[in-house]
Amino acid sequence: MTAVGRAHLKTGLALMLGVTRTDRLIRLMSGTRRLPLVVGYHRVVDDGRQRRASIIAPMLVSRRMFERQLDWIGRRFRFVALDELGAQLESGDPFETPTAAITFDDGYRDMYEHAYPVLKRKGIPAAVFVVTDWIDRASALYHDRLYLLLTRDWPASCEVLVDLGVMTAEQALAARGPNEPFVALRHLLTSLSQEGLARVTAALEAKLAVDTGRLEGLKPLSWAMLAEMQRGGITVGSHTRTHALLTRESPSRMLEETAGARRALEERLGTPIDHFAYPDGAFDAETVETVARAGYRFAYTTCHHRDRRHPLLTIPRCVLWENSCLDPAGRFSAAVASCVTSGIFHFASGCRHRHGVAPRPASLLVLR
Ligand SMILES: [Zn+2]
Ligand SMILES: [Zn+2]
Picture 1 (cartoon, rainbow, N blue to C red):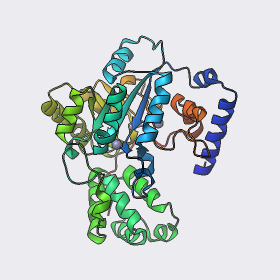
Picture 2 (picture 1 turned 135 degrees about the vertical axis):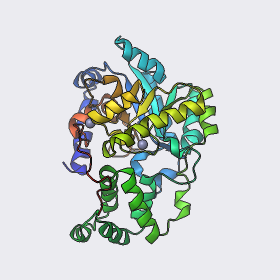
Picture 3 (picture 1 turned 30 degrees about the vertical axis):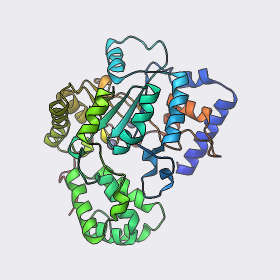
Picture 4 (picture 1 turned 180 degrees about the vertical axis):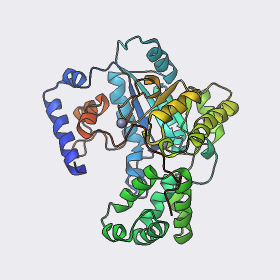
């Protein structure tokens, strides 16, 4: 189904359910909410910034919309910290009242600047899953660097991708639509290991100068910010060492990305690290086993699929961003918000991951 078709289906479904005021039906369709609602955010920016095209849109929410979504959730759910949520899931006791937890992935600095003050003022517990090698660093993550490079000069980027063998000359000729840089970004991120991404990024950066102004705002948290937020009640979890998509990495690399990140956080923060979020929500049987071996008790995905042998290591999440709860006229819609948070849209749009055991690339680079 096309993106436009999906949008119409979603809106139609939401409006139909909204018009008939069938909140209970929504819960029934989503299998009643035996599971708590775990919300995933990435970046929270000041209110004017979300219109800037230099940022990957589905990772952004403005501070105003963030508050709006929190207020809507807060009227319907009881907010809990991840430790409480995990303990109850572990006990097997049902959630008698609708329960929600707020989480952030990656550990962008704007989480400290814009989200943390709102959460503190409202008294809402939350968690942040950080990329440990990135904390305190000056450089941006690969997905942000690649997005800036690919959107800066797409024809020149194409040439580099053809030279590297990640794109054929025919594909490059055909890829002339406005959405192609984003399509290419998704392809690179989901098919290459971290080593492959490093090579592609270096080749693109050698050919195209990065606009350093656009890198502003793509900074990570510092250890001091993380410690301060932890003292303020924020749970710190891990999101690997380098934001590696574990399904693309070798077994030894997977273990280092998961166990190494946990070790680094425990040494630095002095507390047990029990929670993990899969980068891009990508997991398969092998990655889940590795996350278990690395010592995590709870791990979170970005869809509603689960590993039956490790349900606590495949806890579903609902990822929200600026436009998640808007109707076609761009207004906040309770009907759309209900559908999004109840997981109904997963029935409509499915999941782009393959959670079966994915064959690891024979060469970790998938490059010539
Ligand atoms: Zn991430
Ligand atoms: Zn899935």
